[in-house]
Length: 55
Image (cartoon, rainbow, N blue to C red; front, side, top):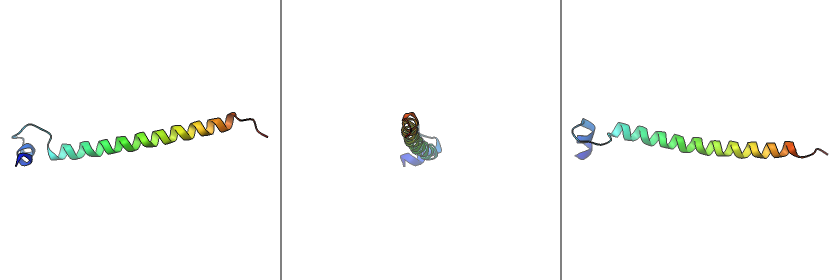
């Protein structure tokens, strides 16, 4: 009942559509931060490889 009232705008709060969108954006942010961390680690690894003297 409360959810229906919130969705209709009769009650203050986050409606279902906004809550879904917010959850999706939070998931995307987590994924992007994880990917960014992986890329930073890979960049550090390859940079260290370039700094090593060749045989």
